Amino acid sequence: MDFGFNLSPSSAVELDKVDTSLFRELCRIEPGARTCIGCGSCSATCTASEHSGMSVRKLLLSLQRGKMRDVEKMLTCCMLCGKCTMVCPRGINTRRIILTVCRLYENVEGRI
Amino acid sequence: MIYQGKQKIWSDYQKEIPDNHWFYVRSCIRQSFFPASEHYFLKICRDLLDRDIYESAHHTTCGGIAYHCDTIPQETAMTIVARQFALMTEAGYENLVTSCITSFGNYTEILETWREFPELEARVREHLWKSCRREFRKPVYLAHASDLVYKLRDEIAARARFSLVDKETGEPLKIVEHIGCHYSKMFPHKGVGGAEYPCVLSGMAEAWGGKVIDYPERRHCCGFGFRQYLVKANRGYSMSNTYKKFESMEPYHPDVIITNCPGCPFFLDRWQYVISEQEGKTYGPDGHGIPVLTYEELAGLVLGFDPWDLGLQVHQVGPEPLLDKMGIPYDPSAKYNGLDRKKLMTPGLPAVLKCC
Image (cartoon, rainbow over all chains, first blue to last red; front, side):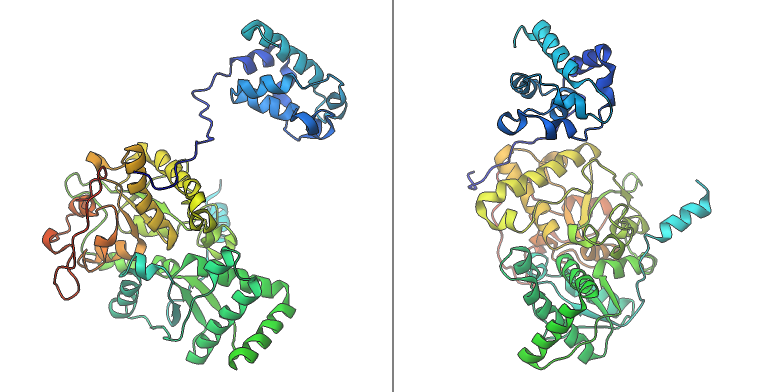
């Protein structure tokens, strides 16, 4: 029956069902990834963020939620300037994290 | 944690609810959605439990719907509310009890705003005097009608003819309680249990023999949200919220949902029909839905009032499976009879959702 409206797709993330192997592998190589508090300083200082949607905070969150398509899109936008590393209050080497994720992606997906 | 310490923390979440002498204000929409709920609230409190509850024929809307739809400014809503306070003052009462959760939220928000900005209160007093020559005193206590039933829950339990227990298995019925967002999410200290642990409905359910289900989306909005529903293009968003709740509660197999808001029971009830038509999915056993009742209707059932006098036939989801579980007798042929016991009409049945 057509009521003139439909259910909106759910944005819920079922952590039991998503593939988080890439995030676990990242944490094994770069344990600093686990210490992110999601403050967003990296995103605030990112030169590329305003034009491209790049955000290290969001990238880590997307990896934890298994949203690989979002991660891939963000990786192609990073210019590796390293400003995010300079401002991180937890001292996380975010630039190295991005490079590591790129390498993991190359291995898993053969892309980037 | 030390028991006394726990008690002290819990005392912060308590609310003072006077026992008697209330000025009652009705809801705009509850009388059409659940025609007997307010009547039975008064019947239970006045006739059965001998409380003094007064209502005025001059009472109007509180302006809450228009305010939350952004069609009137708050100052207009304040002047309307000031008039209700004037009616209460003229009747000689100082405790105000509202039937509607949005009214409760609206009154609370206005009283808190006046506390912060006394000059605004003075201006509204002037507006009221200019428009209808009335003056008012602010209520000493403001409560929602569910607060009052919560306070009286043990007295109701003492007079109960039926309890929230499956008569076949002897197990307590599994109850989902859904509290309207405007009850304590805006001003947590104004609700019993605050916004974190609101126990106004769970207290009733447990006092009457039921077992409350704690499911992941328990505190999620029902999806009404005024503009989400009132604009037809947004209704999918409204229904998606309800869908999320149902998907979350489904694994716990609830027997009944109880609510204390005008909008929540309507949407939790009616969207079950729309979801069944669109998705082919029902949430009760054997193609039935989960009955959604107001707390007054549940109190009425527990006290042994006739389910059809309580207006349960106007719900989309049939209450019969619940009545059977509780062992409440009912006459299926009288379901659609009017108060004069003559048949009004029999509505058409949905294609998917089993209604009786």
